[in-house]
Image (cartoon, rainbow, N blue to C red):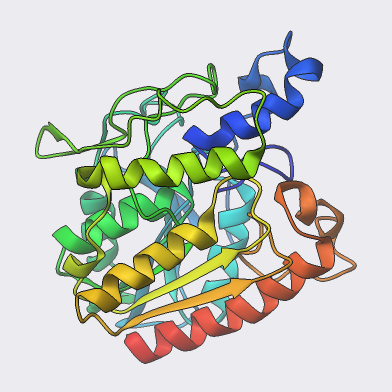
Length: 329
């Protein structure tokens, strides 16, 4: 997701847990200023901005590729085209994948809230990617971070061109809509399909403020038992799944939710779901590797875990992502 390095995350509805801690300092400053929209512009040597009116993103074609593997990469509630996923896109490009980093909300001309986002937006991104000469349309994967993990699972159920998915700091259910202008407020369904809103968790009954975060997370997870329609049916994802989570994730309970996905898949006989969980990693334990001399290294702990723990998770999980994609595609 990306809220931390400059508070630009993919968190979503559970950002209220961070709002609680920060409210005293930032109560007079709009959150949209604290989390500025990023629209990273690719260096022309490595990529290009794509804006067809239907597809907005950055395309990073693999050097010398012809009919190679393609990846649709999406972030979370940071919106736009943020730095974290831009770094990941370029790392994947250097490993032989042609990547479309797609924007689906908050950018100019797109919805201002993570609410009512048409899954057809991702359909169009996949169609555009399949049409590129660098990409073999039969070798396509989708990767989603945080709130983008919801869209990735939902699309894998609906689009047969997707042959594998990677979920970073994933959710196992559809959470409510979200806005940086009022991050404490629950909005409506974040996703629609063919004009119909998809079911989502109603979190309004959970008391968020003045409580221990672990207790809040337990109550939020318990909602899924009472609102099963909001849980994403992983058993309907007919392709291999790789998940990366951080046990110290301070944005939302990515590891407990990833284990829910794993358990539901196993119960249905789906045996191609892998989970990589990192004890000392937070929400930034997914993405491109970051070295200790990188200016971003010290910022890795802002959403849980230590800089060292997140850096180790990034290095190890990225290596596994590349191996997984090469095997699946």
